[in-house]
Length: 494
Image 1 (tube, one colour):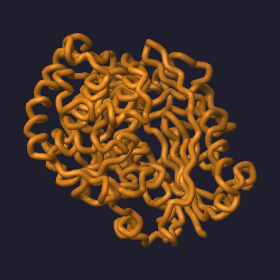
Image 2: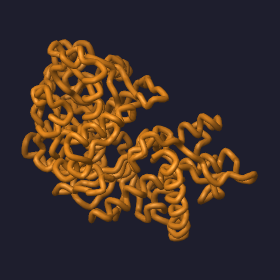
Image 3: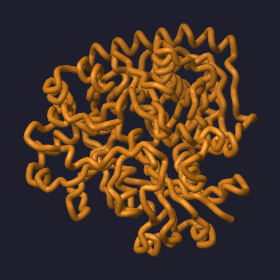
């Protein structure tokens, strides 16, 4: 039983997936929950040691025979997190995460120093948004000057796992494009942006070379192999950000598909053979981890919205679907603008969630929960429209993430976006994509990734959904009402 191991370092947990590529089946999936430190000031942090401990715990739940069958490893990780490392490999501070919105001032300072927001988009492809690594780096310089002096290497979360596994410090173009200081067209670090972050220090010296080719970055260290009870010296692929690995895991490696991820955050993205630059800055001009580009829109509140609403209403996960069923399209007039963690798109980092349209008849648990699902979906529909304006139409949507387990939510996506929704049998998204990337490493430099995805990705016919014409017409009007509600919220918190 030969397997490849995909590891996904998420916000809520660390997940491991063991994939038997000869039998074409997942033989083990385990995860370990992660704590998250958050404050009212927008701080969102984790300790890097929590990640490593969670990886150990998840792997310990997998049988020894399966662990010993691993021939290659790939790592996916939450994007944008700032992991400052000193020369000895010590992490110098808690890791500020993608959902940390406490560095808005630093975003403005960096863009002003660079020549303004439009200049950032024109020259590098992206503005410096709250959550991007660049602002966290400038914040670290100001908040901890003594530790900043010791900074030797800038890593992202998945890079840190690669460093732990192999001892190699590296970064790849897909995840690197979410830092804010990568020129996405050239796939090179921007010296001008690095000077805007810190004019007094050569930050390029703290950055590894950008990896583009899908090749091993190194081998599993003997000490780590013994610690994790994995075979020593197995190759570790470059890995990538969770969206980039999710693209591989959903077969989104050639033009023509749009992936929507219903995870903690929500994302909409599609593969492109050329850079896609949105002059408005709503669509992130990211690189893919497969040699192309991955234009992407991210919302900060997707299953966060439904989980918070479930907790408020004391609705167990087993009752989620029946509660939604008890409501109807439009949630009887309830509209939720789900900006619980602020929002990246639209750029409202200080915004708060708001619920509109409540009255004595619709103040029910089912209507509130349904409105949470619809609000999170409307936020992603905006991304579908923005991609379409850039020439990328959603002829078919591949749905992934925890929200895709709901039949009603799948139908809502199909109706709101007016596109057929495809769900895959391989549910592990980013972790499965990391496993496939590891498999591509085993196949060698000439591996055809499109063909590999076609061999190993299977459509789940029973869970796919086609748009209902009646639902499409209904949601066209309701989406307009949602957009008007967003405008009201924006006026309150801009």
